[in-house]
Length: 482
Image (tube, rainbow, N blue to C red; front, side, top):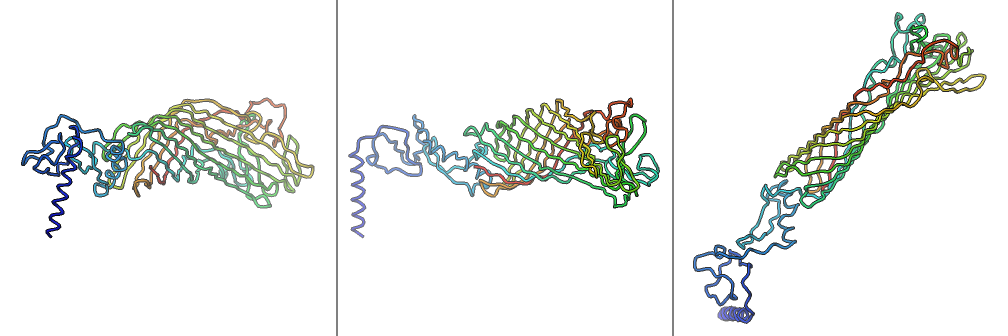
């Protein structure tokens, strides 16, 4: 024990000798931690270091020098994005405690205060599955009728009923995808940029009505004769005379892309908000096709290019109505997020303002298949030479959109969420609006009056009709932040 005590004395003396043998250090801001009490003898310290009088802590001594600015590494450690983010999400127990120099010279364990909370990530990416629903739009005109043989399927006759068309097109739920990615352009996350793309894949709704081989039940395509000013029909199936079928098919597809600049509006411990300003493109494509075919039986007759047809001939008719809406414009919005522990709520509202390029494409065709061969000519029943072309125009439009989602953080990098999205488009063209039942039989290839020199209006006419459009639905996804 004596040897240990003597060894300690020798070590203390040697340390004091080394300290006295060094060059005096100039007075400076490097202070001893206040938790360490200096020895009473001043010779144990190089000249220029403050010595506390008995009973006075070192940190209480006045100094004219400011502490040195922390190094880059010290700054990164003291204000780490991840440390603030961990503290905001998971509380102080899971946040790291890193030392930071204070003015009094004491190294202290810190936890970010609410006023210092920053966005803890530099870049982000999201992937979402969309399950949306479109508004059906306006009702199409009656496309097919049935009734007793004595009525010939003519609207207004007793027992005649519409069996195809005459109502809104009810689309099934549309499946889609949305991908987004963004990055903050500055270290403090005050300004960023984000790009987003989404697509709702094409959805098609079809319906087919057919007669049996004898032509029952009666099927007819209704029209209004502009020459006689009376309701009429194009027969498709008639017992003992014609057998056939009529079919309608409607499709819809929506996609879009936007690029936005993001500006920080508010940063708090549990709530932050960003202003969004950018450009947007939307593309809505839809189509409506009505087709029919009629085969002549032993007691029947049909017409093609003004000529009568006998048994075994089949006349096919196709009418196509396609629409496309292309929106180009700017958008402005506000996005906010509230966080409580691992859970969060995010809300986005924005308004897009710009030009909608509206396009309506109408075309039709008729075919003859029979003993004499096959013939195809342009012009159907509702899409003929008087209206078959591409029509377009530009209209100013507004597109408000709202999105809200709730989710949970799996860790500092990943979160999952489920949300609701609603979008309204104030001015679009849709195919169900475009067909007109008012025709001039002299321009219909499957009518006996085709090509006749009969005075009458050039109908059907191409009149672009517009309506509004909305889409809404659920979105489920995950986000990666780094």
